[in-house]
Amino acid sequence: QQKVQQSPESLIVPEGAMTSLNCTFSDSASQYFAWYRQHSGKAPKALMSIFSNGEKEEGRFTIHLNKASLHFSLHIRDSQPSDSALYLCAVSRNTGNYKYVFGAGTRLKVIA
Amino acid sequence: EAAVTQSPRNKVAVTGGKVTLSCNQTNNHNNMYWYRQDTGHGLRLIHYSYGAGSTEKGDIPDGYKASRPSQENFSLILELATPSQTSVYFCASGTGVATEVFFGKGTRLTVV
Image (cartoon, rainbow over all chains, first blue to last red; front, side):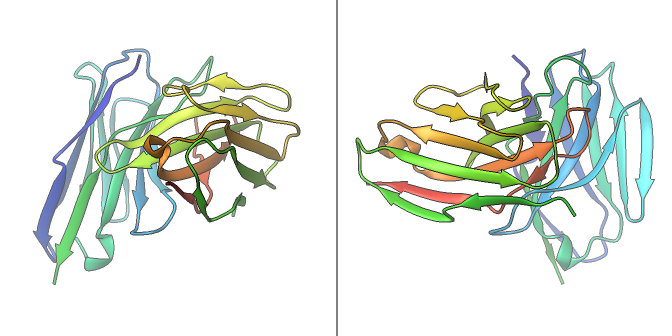
């Protein structure tokens, strides 16, 4: 059974800082890796995803994937108070059953 | 924007009672999912479905049943509700290929 773990559990950073969130997974056959963001009292919403090793940048957000290390991360450049939320990583296989397994989340607070 | 609607949004149930949570999606997605979210556990998969008439057990199915009578509707049924099932429940839908899943706004269930 896939195990997905996130670190740290919570994080407080000043506005403008670089924020780094980590996710490790156990199933080496995983092929889809994503980050979801959930503001307080709201539904989770997909932020960005990656399929192959390397990095992908979208605006202030960068996702890094290292399949050999069973690890991927999310980096937020120039963190803003509006980035304050619960960040969930998600992993699934691309074939067979499309089960998305989520981590427990990292709660980020960006202070002005 | 994909639309997933859950009802009710809030529910108080008595121990031993039957509870039905409903989910409707207008995205014509094949896959639908039920998750529960508890502090420290993130999103945990209860049941999922590949299409009308199909249901599959997720990672924590005990105490829950699911029903997918049509492409659009997916229900989660608690035959004998217990206080340990107090949680926030999210329904989600996806295309079946490893891409973004879209979440409903959640149902807060309290079992007293």
